[in-house]
Image (cartoon, rainbow, N blue to C red; front, side):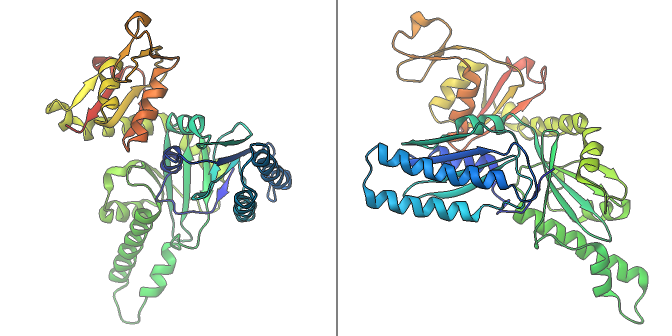
Length: 370
């Protein structure tokens, strides 16, 4: 399993992909590599990425870009290559470069290897794959040490970073003073531990990312008491997990993952109930498409597994099922994916819920800005 170093985790992978989706300049270089055999050093991946940079330079030359621009972009790509954290158990890596962009992204899922030079970054498939997968964070509280994980479906990836607070024992030692009531000392120390963990999450976890807690029952209680965003918590698993392997922790979570996911979905629906009561929403693919095309979208909820094909009119404002009503429009093989991309590109949110959750909304619910 991956042990990943935090890289400004306050921005989720999906948010980073949305940022790249909106970049329109020429050239945009996308180097995406799959890691078929994850290992500590990832020697094969090093070679793949180096060759990817070489291929991108050759493609720039083939497309006739200015030599000075090619030199600048080659230096930028080389710098990105050298910044890759190869000592992680990576599933995939993406290097994205242009005259104004330089970004390395780590993927917790399988990716299709490619090197593309175009007027936009090649990330649509990646974005839609990430958007369709249930993501969450896991925080393990312990006297010995604190552990933090990023969950992607059934996969779990441990993050290693100096910013992660130490275990509760470290806080107890700081507060231990002669002549002071031990019970009072413990209460003060554990409150500080809980507040420090909460501060860490606010810096390194996206605001909407659901959270699973694991650890000692007393520590879990303190965290719940002092957490600034208690609604993020979708589940707790009591026990000691100091030295447990990532694969074993993943098994523990997967036993209850469906229940955790359902709770998060219920919480998500509860957060938009006011929008529903005030009729600030649309239901069904056609109404949702029109609202998104008019840039009124806020949050899109769709049932998992629901697919629909159809046509958008020439101006893009309407979605129809009969091509006769859109003679000069575009065909959409999977309109749900296209709608999700439209919503994400304008700063909205998109989530997929269990089948049946949105039956009364014709499987598609979109809250609107007005």
